[in-house]
Image (cartoon, rainbow, N blue to C red; front, side, top):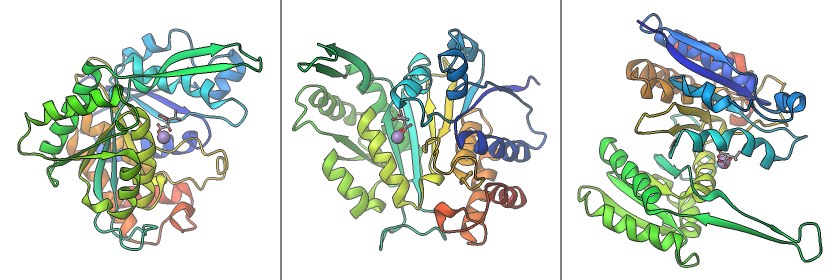
Length: 350
Ligand code: IPM
Ligand code: MN
């Protein structure tokens, strides 16, 4: 059998620390059921310092040949974030039309939530990942002068809205959850793009009578992610709102160090990309204390996507087992374990 081809981009900061840990776990979980060929690309801030760009000009063509992309984190204190992110992460999401950003948030047994009464949280934020507020349409006028003006447009297309909403409904249907989909907008203030979103949501909902629906404005959604997180099942939101809400869903389930994500091309025309929700965390990078779980759980999402659900489930079970026992935890979860100790515990639980 041909090996599965994975392009690995550890990136910057803690990305370089968690990616090798997750690869060890994947190899152990697959045992000899499949072979993976990991190809490492040293792209990111270091590459930028040497070459003046985050990745080579033909990077997208290079990546196209792979089955999936496994990304650590991008970002460096000495380079503006809009340069690092617009030079690597965001172009990959767009070039491969990874329009569904899937971000589960589960309050695992034994993990403390900062909320007093969180209840059993088990939700997925589905974030539109190719347009909306991230479209990079706009410009500067009178740059550098007192009359300087910046225009930043949001782009909402019926095509883009409809496909992400359908994806979220299908997920709510497929998943063994509350069969509920919450749509988040701010159509009271943004009277064009998000009004179109609301209209499309209503029309697509008619095709899913078995899924109950809820529509929230983003400010109320933010409040309710804290007030009643256990009431959510699948949540669908625009690019920026999904970005913000998925940090809230991560922290109410204990730590952003546990939050995994998948950037999916659901039609499988291109490689999808799997990465933790957290960033390069320069404040703790190099100390060996970053939580590897988000990267490990992102790897499980990748295996699921690549047709290895049993190996993915094994990783999920092992992670749950390690988290249930407070013994081995990194500082973000109140423990004093090191990154590698957590990996060792997961490997043992496998
Ligand atoms: C994320 C990150 C990125 C985003 C940043 C780093 C551009 O916050 O994946 O959530 O906003 O998409
Ligand atoms: Mn984010």
